[in-house]
Length: 501
Image (cartoon, rainbow, N blue to C red; front, side, top):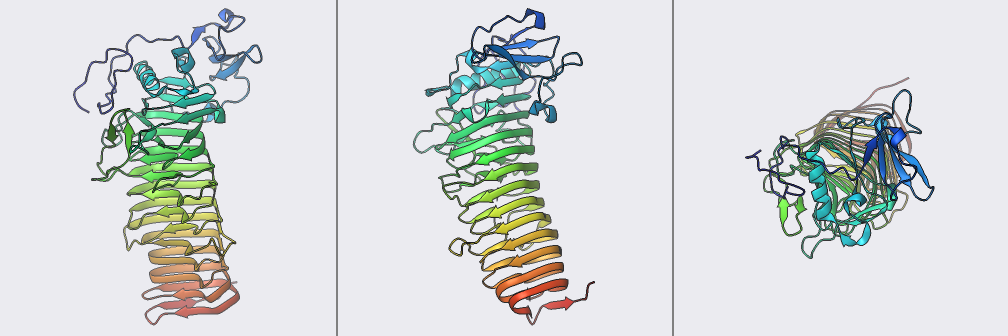
């Protein structure tokens, strides 16, 4: 990690420094929160959003000037004083600092205003340095628009918490520096997964047309929760060479405006990569390019319905990416494809479950790889595009996987081919429907070993099931309805049907 540098006060962590987890804890400014037993809580707060932590309750209360009362803010409570209502933190025990002793830092109490005109990125960065030296905590951003003219860096055991859509983060960038991260973590320049860990960002809106949004980089154990994505330059969330990242609750109304513009990206910083960086306010600092894969990451409970038609909804970029799960979501309006893996990208253990890909040019594109991918699972997923002016290419395309299971999947629309595979070993398909293709319903083009059961091919222009060169297709229980011809087999391919009850 490099030689430890003395930390002498607020904000002495600068971009490019090694992030050393052994830094000495110094005096902590706790102006952001008042502490004591509930009996000592004043009758009124001194200012709107003032916080009082009742040490005998394990609950933090917030003064709400609008209702002229103290209201529950956070904490687990105790047997005698349970938490009133429900907090989303109860189900997300990822930060070991979430105890009754956790400090809560209100940025307003530190002179950080979300007035939409004042640059506060450096002040937020400095405050996060103080929080890190204090052992972490919750940093609360009341409603407002906060302009981050530099990338604030989040440390260990720290949660950035907003008030929902009314807390807006924007990242102004000078000409020529567009796309640098809005938020990232300390240790983005570490190797492996040695950057900041056990941190998160919750309940904020990203409206940052000149920057990329939240970028975990060489990080571990990260939770990004309830994020509203509006204008962005590249991606609202870009996971770079990180592990154990969960994105739970994400709604995108717009995609990016730059060249690579998927709202969500799973990324790996490969050797020689000239992108993925933080902005210090004066310099561009790249993430360390040591080929660390993004591993064990999940996107769940999401809706991507951008008004500006980005190329992709979700992009698996610069592999390797390992153990990626995409589930419980909806993707619409993409000009190329809803979910895409780069050609020849290494992918292992990719799961797509309960996802609807509606009105995109293509649904899922995991193509152009001869070999080297392992373990693909697609369940309970629908790909549907009704408009022939929108649909193009294949609804579902995958190649190069050793071991794949496709079940309870529907592909419907005027795609060139509904479903197409290349270079697949041990492909199992069960309860799959492919309808409406201009050409073929099931196209096993080259070098595919597949078993297809309980399937339906309908309303396709040429062939229901095609077995191409060096492909071996076994099928049974397939229903054919209004197809040009039921089966076609290339001279070098094999196709075998068996009866099913």
